[in-house]
Length: 152
Image 1 (spheres, rainbow, N blue to C red):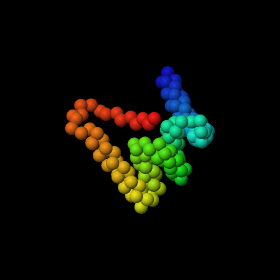
Image 2 (image 1 turned 90 degrees about the vertical axis):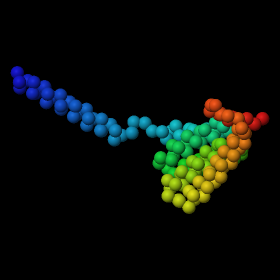
Image 3 (image 1 turned 180 degrees about the horizontal axis):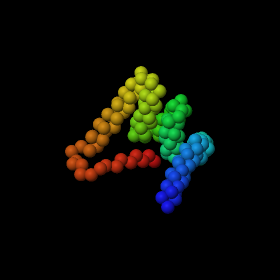
Image 4 (image 1 turned 90 degrees about the horizontal axis):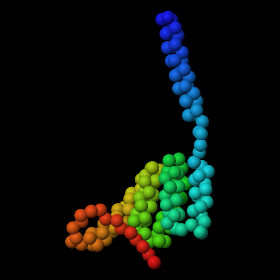
């Protein structure tokens, strides 16, 4: 009887070990890849029929995806994002794009360029802060503020 219990416990442990080994085996092979999705997203951003705001958001996602594995590609798409935001003159989006470019240069260990970029970002953020404070004037803020920029 005790031998049956010991044998059952041994089989149970062996079963768990096999499951763990199988999971390690599966993790060695990628089950899916983001590459086709990113490639399709890149193609979409090249279409003229896509609105610029959608292109900006798509380029942000592409930039962040490449930031993990290809900093050179990431900087290319961040610069595309910056050029569209500059064309639209969306100050908040420009600051965001410049911030992303700064962080990419920081990851590339291009520290001189990083400092130049961060200085641009600081100047832009200070400009936005001054604009906001002048708009706020003496009004007491009782809640968060949402700023929407609409150009007709």
